[in-house]
Amino acid sequence: MNAVVADPRRRVLLVEDEAALARTLVDLLHAEGYQVETRADGALALDAACKEAHDLIVLDVMLPSMDGFEISDTLRKRGINTPIIMLTARDELGDKVEGLRSGADDYLTKPFEAEELLARIEALLRRTCKDTGSDLMSYEFGEVQIDFARNRLIGSATATNLTEQESRLLRYLVRHRGEVVSREALLTEVWGYRSIPFTRTVDVHIAWLRQKIEPNPKSPRYITTVRGQGYRFDG
Image 1 (tube, rainbow, N blue to C red):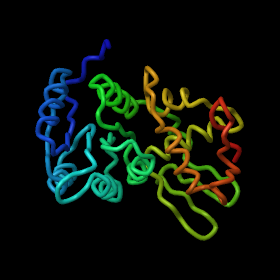
Image 2: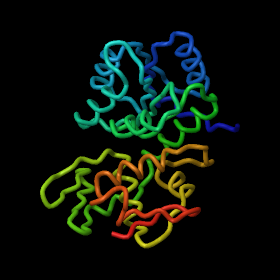
Image 3: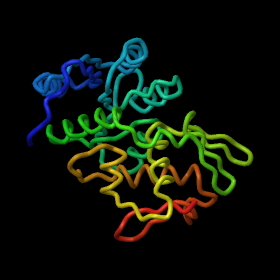
Image 4: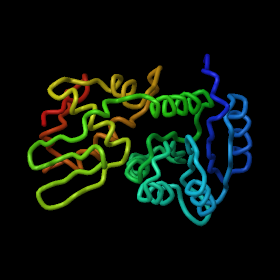
C-alpha cells in the first residue's frame, strides 16, 4: 500500500485498553506522521476528547469504566463531531448498528490489517476537508423536514437528531434523488475512500437512517434498495 504521508499536525486520540495493541497502533500512527494521544480508560478518554481538540478518535468498544458506545453518544450529544472509528471485537451486525447509532462514523472488526486502519483514517480526515454539498441546508418530503444545518429531522409530531455521518449520507442521497447510487459511490463520495474496502458500513447506516425517516422501515418508501446496484432516494 502506498499510503499518503500524514500531516504531522493531525492529532489522533487512541482509546484502547489492550496494552500490546495500543503500543502497536501508536508505533503505526507515529510512523505515518500522526501525533497520538492514548487513553486506556473510558472516562479518561471522554474527558480528553471533551477538553482537547483532536482530528480523529480511534475508539475501542470494551473499556474500563465506560464503553465506547457511551463515549461516542456522549460526545455527539455535547456537539463534538470529531470523526470516530470504532473498534469492535465481534463481527455482529447488532454491535455495528449500536456503534453507528451512537455517532461513530465507521467501524473495524478485530483483528484488522494495519493498512485497512490507515486507509479508514485517511478517508475520514480527507472527508472532513471536503465539501459534500453543504449549500443544501434543508429539504422536505412526505411529513418530514430535514434541517441539515442542525442535523435534525422534524416530523409531524416529533424531532429526531441525525449523526454527522447520517446527515452527510442523507444530504448526498437527496442531492441525487431519483438516481440509483452504488455503495461504491457512497463510500467514495460520502466516506472519502480512494479504494473501496470490504465493509457493510453503508448498509448499516442506511438501515439506521430508515429507522428515522421511514413510516415503515421494513417496507421503505423513500430509501429503496435496487438489487445488485445500490440505493435510490425517492423523497
